[in-house]
Length: 467
Image (cartoon, rainbow, N blue to C red; front, side, top):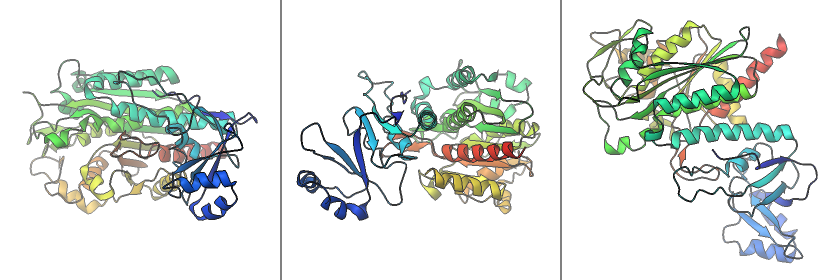
């Protein structure tokens, strides 16, 4: 994982290069205030004026240069993200002091996934000064959580199977003094997790399906349960995907990656909750014993499910995990899944679809996402569409026979396994950045992670103060 420890430091008045942040509307007046040499450097830049562009401003001698960057209006956490890859190694101070949330973009501008590169020497850090050690630590933790999602999603399925997800959870348990238990293979049937077993049973030996269960916190605190879809590779099963559709399916465990990262943030912050993390980890493979279209599977909740499509497997592994989560009667359940292409058609790659039973929880998530530049978009749990999941021979089908409202019907399927009165949030996220952006290289990406963490932190901190 990228080391973020040297990307930020507390400002104690130490020597540092200055970086000026300039809004597009201020450029003309700002340029007029510069020395002739600095103004000439600005004039020579072919694109200076576009958000994210930067320029080196020369001083009286070669050692007295400063940096300047054009920042967007309104501000963005990514406004400084292009600079670590452009400036020389050293220590920098944003003129005017506190970079605020833009410090996270600076830190993530250092992110590299170099596990498979023969030349993977990490680049020297560019250190940005922030007001305090606590501010630096908080940003570093968010950067590490974002990078954890990226690293797990970027890792090819050969090295990120169910056993590797299990090891990631065990490491998190060791790091945060949490308890982790795992149910594997045919023991899933004995422990009444039939749909997790059904989806993952076709995988090769050593890649058997499993349910990972982490717990942490004090028994008297409010119960928070996080669930993540851990489909480590999705061939589509017997309803096999096309080559193009299968190319990125190493990222189908992106929900589990988000769940691990959110749990990490909760435990590092020592929030006053009783945390449970559930990850059904499987590989949706093709073999003689693979789940078939037309099969009927009994779920943990007792509902029977007719398999209309073996490529709608994520909701199957999630439904047993959600039923298990429901048995604890938690205060809040949040699940993450790379569940439907329909959500991407509706919202594109940058906006995770968010479904919530509680209006107040949805509004708090939207506000948190807006405040930390991690937007989420609420989608409807439109009950009339439950009719689209009708089966002729079972209680419910795992997929609709119409292409309409695919993300909604997937969420409605999951809703059957969570009590109607439960505060439950479902994220249908892409977990991928299709093109390079400052601080966000092409590849795995966390979407809706920081919004959820900040909502949770605000919610339970407020509850703690009121008790």
